[in-house]
Image (cartoon, rainbow, N blue to C red; front, side):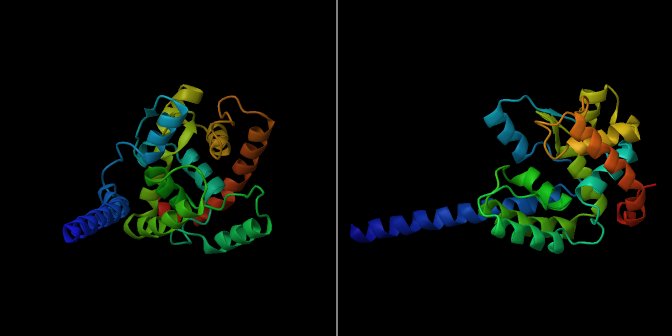
Length: 235
């Protein structure tokens, strides 16, 4: 009887280990699928709907049907070195890590690349923790390995949250400006990019002084960033 009980415990541990390994492997397998298939939903959408109660307005549009004004504004604001790193900007990561250690317990600035944000949006959860970061980093490296930079940006602008419950550039353009994502002007694109880090507080359609100021900065920086975005194959 004791031997049977011991065997039963080992079997449960084994099945639990298999389940854990399967859950850890699933994002890597889905990344391969999402190379050509738009994600039907993301973990972040489910998380926000569950805990915030917001309805999901998610509209996918190919990058070719999205204003290049928006693409350039978003990349300029969020990850201007996207063509230079392999998913993680180690220089920025090291700087942010050192600041976090020196300012333990205080607020820390974000240093995530667009690729890291894609990994988080697709497969992880919003709250900051060492566990999430430990899962996010290898996922970002894997995504950068199997996707083109253009695909990474395409998935990002389509799965990022642009207002509470509003996901994707098309849904954002309709929500804030009553126009398609392809018709976004430079001004509207910059406002969206400026509001992107905290869309629950920042309103791209009715920008406050801070968003307007950041939008102006983004517009000024875009022209100097464009020559370094050849990997995105923008026209």
